[in-house]
Length: 303
Ligand SMILES: Nc1ncnc2c1ncn2[C@@H]1O[C@H](COP(=O)(O)OP(=O)(O)OP(=O)(O)O)[C@@H](O)[C@H]1O
Ligand SMILES: [Mg+2]
Image (cartoon, rainbow, N blue to C red; front, side, top):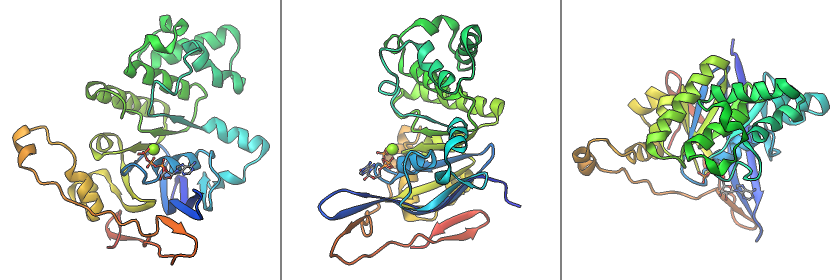
């Protein structure tokens, strides 16, 4: 039996961008995530990763298709069910500067969710905030400070503590390390991995490039202009990329050895925007989105 925690089924999210044009930001995307698993979602800017993340969080209503959490359609939830769902899911953002309110203290930033869901009050609330700060490698003295007093890596730790405050089960990590120095990136990834083990968290981990995703993801999905074109276990994707877009993304990862890096050839990929824009009055041609299993647990859209 499948024990899928999250199931994304034929999800479409189209935006009307004016001028009689529909942008198919997410177009017929299906994948699932098991409890405790990390599913990496990679692709270039504009491929629809954040839109997938926001739709799973319930922040966007799908144009069509469904998102199930433990078998329940999250977009059909109302009242108490919706409130329970909101406590189960959280998001960590790319920009550790813009995502923290500069006028709030760290204590209030982390405490906001605790207050909204009425989890702790008074001394217990304070204790919980201290505990969360320590959990993410900060300390209680940081509680009274403001975001501008911290480095980028520390701010991202505050963002993680804020996400953990309501004890979620599922976290969408939307490029949480892209804005950080390379030396700090691994620290934040290792923290996320440690927290996942301790708290049995399930992650959707969104990233531009494949280099860091490899370390954190169990399985990886590659998005290209609104479509998921390849899904495989992380090691299989690196060992045997099949879609030419995946190959080009992999060839773009810089090699640590400068000599090898210089000699390496980048695989070029000509983007085909067919089906990304749907202009009224023009022929409606869509690119295929049918994933075919080419080796065990390795799926690809055939070209
Ligand atoms: N609210 C919106 N209204 C109109 N268009 C949108 C909206 N949100 C996203 N888009 C468009 O949908 C496409 C996918 O955007 P999305 O943010 O999901 O991409 P992404 O893969 O996360 O890119 P990035 O790597 O830059 O974050 C883009 O062309 C974007 O301009
Ligand atoms: Mg994005």
